[in-house]
Image (cartoon, rainbow, N blue to C red; front, side):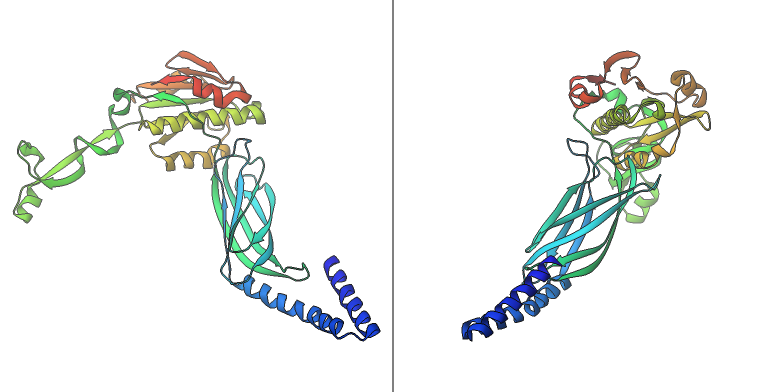
Length: 359
């Protein structure tokens, strides 16, 4: 509105001077000033029509613990777009908390508007961007473009470097698990890893006789190796008693440890005590998608504390594991009963890098 008033004042002033001095130059300037807004409006409409937007939210926090909200704006028109503005609303799927983030910037050809969303609880969030407002060079006109961008993102705790060493016995510990190694063969007759032609030295019991008869050639069926979750991570904490800062450090360490085990191809269980049901719950983590599922739902549970070693043996009798990691509410980390480190909330990154876990 302010720019419009200034522009109208400029037109009126130019018109008054042109009449007062009867100047052709001022009359030409007056005509140019009058015709300029329709031209800018046409440019703005064309740019708005060919503007393509894509919304994204980072899953991981930056070094300050904040999450990045980005809108990629691709101006496919030949005209320059001086400014675009929008508002992104983030909504937590668990508690309904909303966070509003305002983005603004220039969109000459392609630009990424970025801004941090501050503190976000871990878990599933939905980000909505309904409109993008486009402005002309003089700031007089603005046009809204419907973008209707909606994305869902699992907000994860920070993940840092750590020294986790998983031995061969831990990674390839045979068990009666329902998961098989995707690359290493074994002797499980219920699961076939791959089929190939017969090679000298192959055992006769490996030959797939039905396929061999159908193909008039000997076909060998390589069996898979069943693998269980050989490391158990006990999450011994009551979240209500931790507080925001300490709780964030707790989950960052848990996430770092789990990611470190995955990087070592070490399947593991994340185990916690469910206070409502008064029993243990666990999540098998064999790949990153499993870990994302865990973070998407863990805050819906009411975690508590118990004697994990005793209760795990009672609830899951006969299920062997090679190593266990105990991560408690006091931010003390144990591995197979041996104390490793006590984490300070402000030094999570440094201390996790210093400690060496051998499972």
